Amino acid sequence: MQLDGKVALVTGASAGIGAAVAERFAPAGARVVVHGRDAERTAEVAARVDGVPVLGDLALPGVAAEVADAALAVHGRIDILVANAGLGWSGPFVQMRAEEIDQLVALDLLAPLQLVRCLLPSMIERGSGHVALVGSVAGRTAVAGEAVYAATKAALDIFAESLRLEIRGSGVSVSLTVPGVVDTGFFSARGRPYDRKRPRPVPAGDVARALVDGITNDRAEIWIPRWLRVAPAIRALAPGLYRRLSARFGERVMPR
Image 1 (cartoon, rainbow, N blue to C red):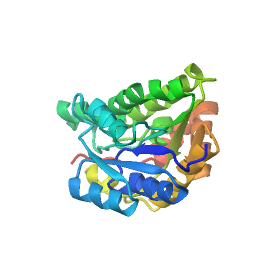
Image 2 (image 1 turned 180 degrees about the vertical axis):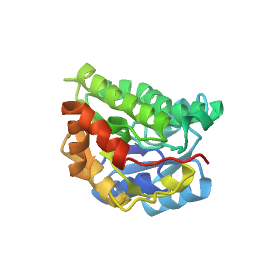
Image 3 (image 1 turned 60 degrees about the vertical axis):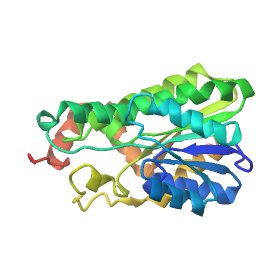
Image 4 (image 1 turned 90 degrees about the vertical axis):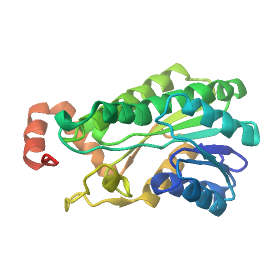
């Protein structure tokens, strides 16, 4: 897909990966609709990319449809959806409040599905478009202390694969970007900073570059960094070994 002249909606674009994606789209000639919750930060990113800000808390019922409608109203269509908005939570599952589970599932899983449901029909009708979903290596390998987050990303992974098969031949493509540890504010927002020496966090700009490259080259799956593919391969081929290694080297979680 050529980006020049395309209209892209990027959710969670007020910072981190989303902002970096918006900043890569603009120089390529795409018109960007910048979604975020924070009005000031979203407006700042929109100004940098000559885009249009759209506000909304995607964790709330019905807001995904409102964001989709607002984005469609800007240029009359959306050619590319980058469903990037997300939230983490770290700690023992038994300490997670019911409302925290609901919020994570709503934002990390239900919101992307609702956005795709709202925007996909017009893409199929035009015979052109791209749905870019942002997953996580946690959805392929599991992470102690992030059971719900990992579950939402695993579900998004299967959704991407299923949707890709379903709309094959329609002219609309689907990609899933699978990042590892990314240097953003995600970890402080989840309640516990990232404190391991390995693997080192990758810059948000690197993830954005890989994601956008995946769109322009119609790649179904984008791993960043690429060596992360080894972990789910070991899990599939030698699950016993994988679990022993995870127990020994995996992230330890202490009660908060």
